[in-house]
Image (cartoon, rainbow, N blue to C red; front, top):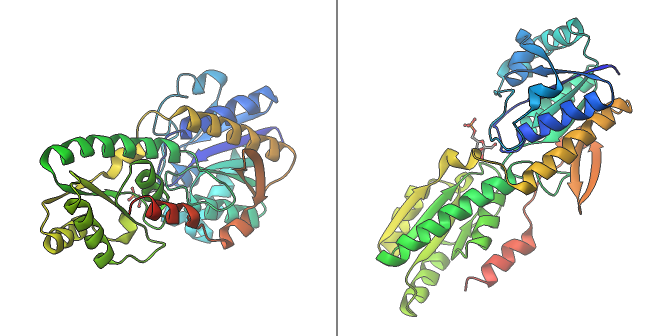
Length: 319
Ligand code: F6P
């Protein structure tokens, strides 16, 4: 393989740039040419493709967002869309593709692989919801953004002796909520993977209040429902002054943490190694700090699950 392509797709995540840099530098180190495909699969269809050099990825390792831009592309879900994409790859002489993104992006890579074009998936999403890897690129940074916010909210919550509901991202996955709730000492953590009992939440808040607690924090993953609605219910049921903070898109941006930069560098370079070994149709990950790769078709059939032991621990520590 003498020419590969790289794209970022789906929701962006901090560390995607470090992954792109690793793909480009590793390929050039192996004397392989690299082409950047802009705006995800939609740029693949329209041919927004450009050769990248060593310097093209200079000064980006520490930047959030993605230099290659990203998009969600409904057209790529159609066979016609994918055929247009393959025609562009052929036009540029690209023989293999690294796709950095979440499960939707993996689906595109899987479909291309099925059509005979070798792709390797690199897990880039703040949600940490890709099977076959302990961590996805961007999760650690998003988590630290949430923790920073919780710590600040805790200050004002204590001053005013209030309860705060903090809504975090995670449409289908509770990892951001669970990890930030545990690290932030939240009273209750509501995740899409587990039912919650409003009665338990309310009695825990009242118990805390009765023993002199000055503030309470409830973390709600967006997939559970509106933090505003949950906050109103809590205020009505407890009689305690309650405020809601929806953290939103600040979780997707910002300088990637060292952990995300290292993870992105390792996974990006590993994806290139696999392509050059002729191993398409794979996705890379990290498990017990070892680089691993899996069949992308099998990974898409699996369902991500949150760490149930950690969820139980969070409940035990917040009695
Ligand atoms: O995939 C990451 C994520 O941030 C989810 O947690 C969130 O639900 C979704 O993206 C929002 O995506 P969009 O910006 O396309 O609405």
